[in-house]
Image 1 (cartoon, rainbow, N blue to C red):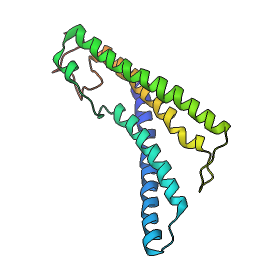
Image 2 (image 1 turned 30 degrees about the vertical axis):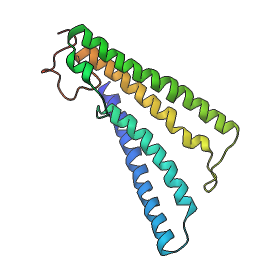
Image 3 (image 1 turned 120 degrees about the vertical axis):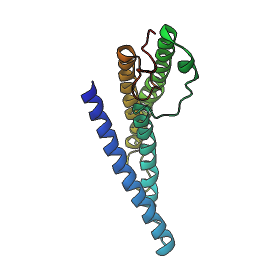
Image 4 (image 1 turned 60 degrees about the horizontal axis):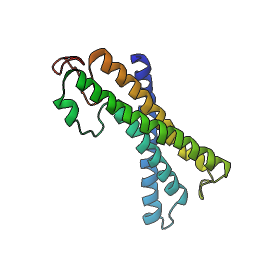
Length: 174
């Protein structure tokens, strides 16, 4: 799974970097057009808003996959052995349930309803369903990372909040 994970990481990085670069260019152009040209661009304003949504959601998935997300890891740190394994499994399960139900299922429902109503954005005339695809896409990425975390947990005792080598922390059944 390491090759697949590296591929997912690389794709997410490229999409985030590209979207962020375009986002910065849109914001710079918005400032120039508003204050220098005295004629604000509505297209770049809307594009920046949509790119921000994508960068935030995909950035959250990527950060989660890199184990650099915000976490309160009190229980995994103070537990050992089987209890620690159960705590880490519970954490991964809670994240997977949220990503699966809210982001994937709810996101697909939102995308399909928005596409059915043919709602488009005012300036770009872009179907809003395409903007909302970021929700289920990032949910799928989070679910994938949850699966890899479960594999790491049972193979090496590395929980979702553990950074680097777990040799000093101990395996799942210490």
